[in-house]
Image 1 (tube, helix red, strand yellow):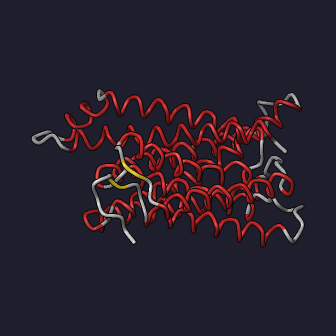
Image 2 (image 1 turned 135 degrees about the horizontal axis):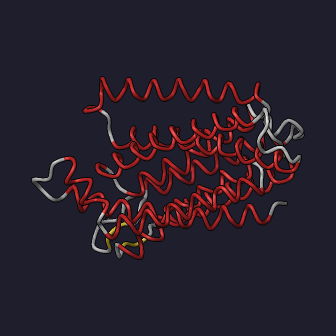
Length: 297
């Protein structure tokens, strides 16, 4: 079992929750200031202490995510991100002086159990091998379709799009980022081992890297928009459910990282994913509440 990759992913999940919490507070503090134009609003945001601290946490989370992807297969690393939602709930309890509801605690436990089942199964059933060009091309084509559809939606219906839609679209983009970065890391590692970092495979690896960068920029923009109209919990929920779902689906379906897995593992993957999603739904339905607020049934 790739212990190093799992450990890096767990720490990265904690830092992701911290980053989302502080970035969300920074965005909302700037949105509360009236009379700021777009440029002044951005300048005010990038000089806000909370937003900068959150950005620092997110950068560290991304670096640890890359380390985890280098050490473990994609289906092992990505589901661990759901733990960010657990950490976010606990942070709300601490920072907002809120109380966890009984159902919310049950959701946390269910999330942890589902994630653990998925990760342990994936650790023994999946492998990480450099993806060849024919396997990666469909990923790039799908990314182009997603970016085109997102751009069209922003042009035609931006005012009607809710924070949930922005968060989900951002999470989809990040799912592609993680998948393509896994491709880049595996192909670069294989090239270094063979002493041919600069070779015929380099242009396609650079194309995957640039594509990941474009998807990342679009994803960051969409997530910041989600922060301005929604809570950090909402963004974390989208990132920890939709992002892994997209990345794991691409890793298993197109990159073939589970091609040697026994047939019994796929029902286990499906059940574990459903259990994790049920845990997320429980937490979203019963979030931490102020101590003087009525408890939801």
